[in-house]
Image (cartoon, rainbow, N blue to C red):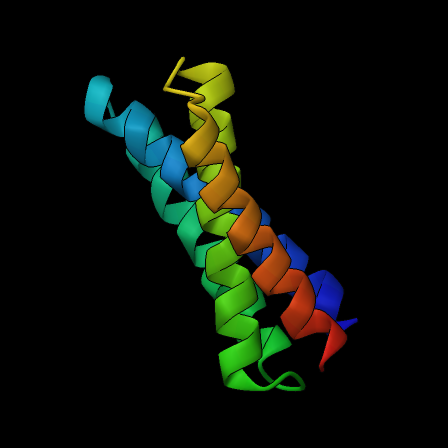
Amino acid sequence: MEWLYLLIAGVGEVLGVICMKFASERKGILPKFLLAASFAMSFFFLSKAMEVLPMGTAYAIWTGIGTGGSSLLGIFIFKESAYWRRLMYLSFIVVGAVGLKLTQ
């Protein structure tokens, strides 16, 4: 169950970053509310996952999901660069996260 919590926390992190982008571009309370709610959800589920998983593993995978997911959504939604070196380094993050999971 803790890995599901960690996945939900990572998705919340990605949503929080996307909401941060929208909140910086738009006026109004809704984008800022969604930003706070996304990060609150992310931190809540990260703390639930850390009840069982080692802190270093949970945090590294959480940040990996956040970094990788935000970068990929930036490429697909915001038309950011998809240069091959950028994708190569993102793949290193994924390999590191999988390695941490396998050695858990």
